[in-house]
Amino acid sequence: MSAQLVLAGTDLVEPVASEGRLVLAALLGIGVIVALIIGARLHPFLALTAGALTVGVTAGVSMETALTSYTTGFGTTAAGVGILIALGAMFGKLLADSGGADQIVDTIIGAASPRMLPWAMAVVGAIIGLPMFFEIGLVLLMPVIYLVARRSGQSLVTIGIPALAGLSAMHGLVPPHPGPLTAIDYLHADLGTTLALGVAVAIPTVIIAGPVFGLVGRYVDVPVPERFEVAGDEEFSRRPSFAITLASVLLPVVLMMGKALADIFIDDAGDPLRRTLDVLGTPLIALLIAVVVGMFTLGHGLGRDGVAKSLESSLPGVAGILLIVAAGGGFKQSLVDTGIGTIVAERVADSNVSVLLLAWFVAVLIRLATGSATVATVTAAGLLAPLTEQLSSGEVSLMVLAIGAGSVFFSHVNDAGFWLVKEYFGMSVGQTLKTWSAMETLLSVTGLVFVMALNLVI
Image (tube, rainbow, N blue to C red):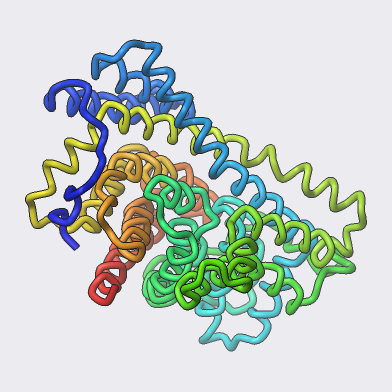
């Protein structure tokens, strides 16, 4: 799949200025974002807002037009993705507060032999990572990682890296996380197809970047920090069973995959079964159903007041993410409305550059510059959106995954996740680079390899 397929018959935005000026506008906009996030330590929401306005003004449009582009993109993204992020946060908080997450962890870990513990931790990380943001999943899993490392006598890195790989792969590759959801929205990808392909890419990627790479723990001696007292079962006297918890977690995934399968195998759009599955598998409906069902299955032991408190407390923690994603939508719309995407598409149309490789590389550059996987995904997807016009549904989904893989490349000192891992694991900067940063790089490259492999058959 090369860029030669892109431009025929497409309806791209007419550039508002010369090519040189628009390229300068895009570079300055991204430069402002990078400088404000790294140099001024400004919140990405403000940096993205400033970057979007910089693009418009540098391109030569009026401030009023630049503001209109930004607010249009902001509102569209908040409406399309923001609701899903909020629902995902609610479900994740119910999972944590009810003890359901602990039930998953305890059940899987309890059934694993010492040799299989790293593999079990990868499974735990992936399952917990499905409905939860990376930071939330990390905080939730750290006491368990400590406990497993202490009891097994294995390296903290050997036990922890697989769990982090599971969390990170879900964060970058599998909806309903903000990055993949935003890329799906911008590139008009099919969510069910992307979800299915994302899981297919994530499984072998987690194996390689998790349990296999986790063997590096033999060479990085990190004692288990004396930081947490691991909570016992008494904290959750009526926590849900493993079967109920797992069914609750997988419910929205099954609903969304059901829609994708119905669209593939049932040709008649008016068929009652397909129409039903299409409604139930719509992301908003699937996540809403998951939250409502979770209030009863996961919240049974919390009581009515406990469920209400859990849902209420879930939203403040994702307010910043909502603003970043929406502001990224504003930045994307600023790029689109100036026509810079048209120029990018025209420049690569006659080349043999793989669209998937290009998407991955752009996301990598922005990730290295800003330290944010979400910013990298949002910016790359917005910049490259015109390249999807003549791609098949499967190819667009693979492009989403290529961007997602690039967005987790080499976490380093400008990434908040880098410092979170460093402090929780009690490692030096050098040790964190050798373990966490190297794992993220391996995960990113491995993800790209499997995306390219799938492209051979799709």
